[in-house]
Image (tube, rainbow, N blue to C red; front, side, top):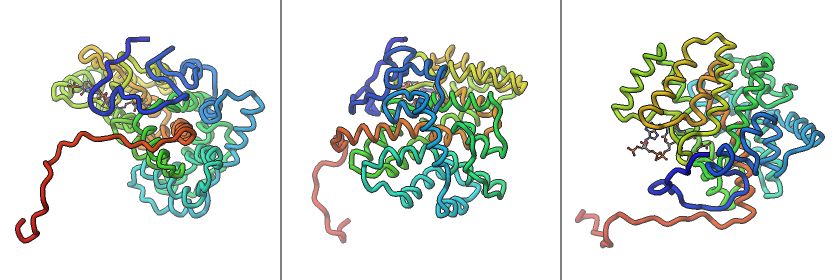
Length: 375
Ligand SMILES: CC(=O)SCCNC(=O)CCNC(=O)[C@H](O)C(C)(C)COP(=O)(O)OP(=O)(O)OC[C@H]1O[C@@H](n2cnc3c(N)ncnc32)[C@H](O)[C@@H]1OP(=O)(O)O
Ligand SMILES: O=C([O-])CC(=O)C(=O)O
């Protein structure tokens, strides 16, 4: 593990804003652990549903517990009629992250968490239903079909791809979805999780916490970077063209999405894992452009700026090779990070004090209100 990044300055960088037993970022092992397990180990040996169980319920499940959990999630995939009607009214041009936000918020009206004892059930429901929400809207608005969201797919990743394409995915695609969902599941006090915790600290309901978190994840400096990275790399004809364009962007001091990190200093441990899968998918589809372009971008950014790919960069090409439309990239992040967000809400509630920092005042000195006629 590399040296820790120097953490100070604006953006609350380096401030300890609370306690968590959920994950460590940039501290031990490859640099990311969930409840003490290294993310590499989890990505190699677990299904996403096992990791979701670990994050939400505190331990890795045994086989019977996992089977029971998967059966339960399968039984929770259905959409209430009123939610389908709302989704059908959202235009095709809407951003899918806005659809996720509205879907979550609407569910909060239909299946309101009235007591915190319902928080575990509410989290399981959101985990099961998020793929249904996004695919139902996408297929209705783009293809005019009202899909059946209650598939019998074994995993959340396969359920998502099946609804999106109208046919079951192959084993490679199901496996990549599984790994991807594990990599995105939890990340300490990142901006969207902190949003969820601030909301939870007011003793608000879980749907409000998650709806707020979706809004924070949407931005290109956070989860929206996977989409922004795709928009950039698909403009490059080949690796040399990518290098030439990147040099220009760096000269103009433009932000290059999918690079850099607020906490990691020399690498994001999730990158090496998703990069390997992107390479496998490139071979699978016979790609000779996008993967070499992505590798060249990585080389140029490191050579010129010592900036490295974060979790989002190689997710762009990996999802693209699986035929996933670019605008659905960040909603996949939501389908996974829901686990981390919800577990942080539980943690905040279990040891709560309202989150209310102070501000350094930079405004006018005290003054009197002038009568309106004199202004
Ligand atoms: C899953 C995730 O959410 S991972 C993050 C996804 N976000 C992105 O990929 C967006 C692009 N990256 C960034 O904007 C930033 O690296 C962030 C938001 C991730 C982290 O921000 P910070 O902690 O403020 O960055 P940091 O302090 O390391 O920046 C140091 C310098 O590198 C520059 N820099 C950082 N990232 C980039 C980048 N991607 N492209 C160009 N320059 C960059 C900064 O502008 C800064 O330069 P300055 O000192 O001249 O102002
Ligand atoms: O931790 C962060 O700031 C952003 C990030 O990588 C994540 O949320 O996965």
